[in-house]
Length: 252
Image (tube, helix red, strand yellow):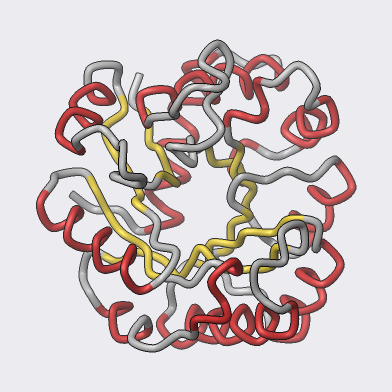
């Protein structure tokens, strides 16, 4: 089976393992492609550098809602780089409120506009902000390729996203015993609108919960999705491989 980790943060944190080792461990278990996500200008520049240096790695360019107050300077220029395949991650986070909500909303709307202008996918982070997230998307227009990364809603939020043509990306949270609403959302998501991710180094799946996450664990997410959808794991692997390729336009 071949797997794609459609959302990871390679090299994040002062104690991060060497990227060469992380990629080698992932490839050893069939994870062959990686979308390395930027969250501000510095991490986007680093993501582009890593993508240039390693096969099977692509980058995104975006400003996370936590950092909305820092501004968007310099980010749009990176959207034309051949290794940049999406805008984001961007969106709203009203759980932590690390940036003022008004600035989060403004920055999110601007990045939706970038996705339209550059014909790129949009990668959304939404936490405790579903109504506002959907309202801004409706106002600005949902890009043709939009994904809710690390989807954490239940069936109602899943339906609202799917009604707008979005994809849903599930992380290691879907393996948590307590995540029954999220598992119900995964169960109802059409396989051609479903992606999987690690969001590493965060949110390691069971049985690695509480430890640093890594792309090598993405198959565990796929297995959990297969279980809630009552499908063979091989079917989920094949489908998410193809869907991720088409969504981001990944080409070797």
